[in-house]
Image (cartoon, rainbow, N blue to C red; front, side, top):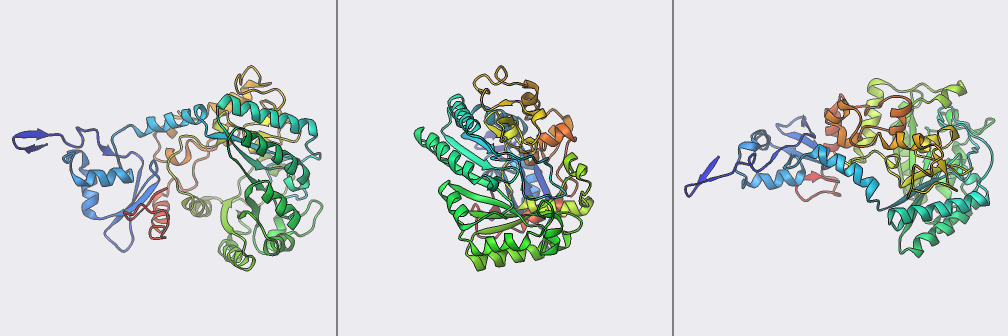
Length: 453
């Protein structure tokens, strides 16, 4: 309490201020300071001992104390219920979309046979009738959502086995968005083997802004897992494509990390940096731990999965680079406005399920989000995904400090394999220090020595 001119002023606590429930705190090595990452705000900064003390007594300070505004901007104190806000944000993602998202598989066939792949591949390309259905579905989704923008991810299988489908559908979907005064954007997930200059130019015309291409290591290390169906190396052709072609999109080089290639994480990153410099193409490498799946196990050649500290280190490296504010939902599977479409027109809520018609919830021909349950051929396959969204149906998750970061985790894995927590859940210090290392990068700072979204 404070007294000024005989009048009692309110404390910060009486004004509703309190330390955020989503702060992660760790000592900065070699200093007396601490780093605090706030997972709700998406901000990390370094604090002195006096600032840490002020945070510990924040509710006792005068509400007009100058530190209140600084702490509030960084999110380490709040005057509202952050968990309730996360839950509201999760509901709003379904109620008020900024656009619709389509993951489209022109084919479920693939020219590779990777042992850890979670998909069962089958031949065939998307026919004209299904393409018509996809365009009509996009129109219904725009109508029901009152959104204007369309975002497409080209997936498969290997989508470049059917480039004519990509080109045809892209033109029609771009026209649909343009006709509503909206924007169209696209990305592609491809193994990169079939890239040519003509294909790259076509993707550029189709507004593909980014491509994910997986490289599993250098030379033979990559070829051991990323090989052609029936056998055959792929490393040289993929890397030659990335080096020699003029690519009108950014390439995110994914390194699927497992026991056999963990030792090449740093070397591959250096290789990709050199590849980008030589080619003039925009590239960025990121590691991601390989996870198990029934489809991979059925192949009989599952690679050795990472576990324990190894998975944690890879996960920290991956996640620290995409630090962001809490979203309230994990992915598009938690909304009506993002769907996957296979080559036959079956609809799924997750791209990890596009090869599994048995858990499809409807078809591009019939489903209408204006009446989502009545037009679904299997409503349970729709509602089971939506019902994993906030408020998360798991009390342990709802109480967890990591909730803004993971929003309860992957809904598909929760439904079919059990809750999957972040690999470094029990090692918050390593994550905070990885974020702290980004302070001073010269980008994305708030002018106050912090790393915000």
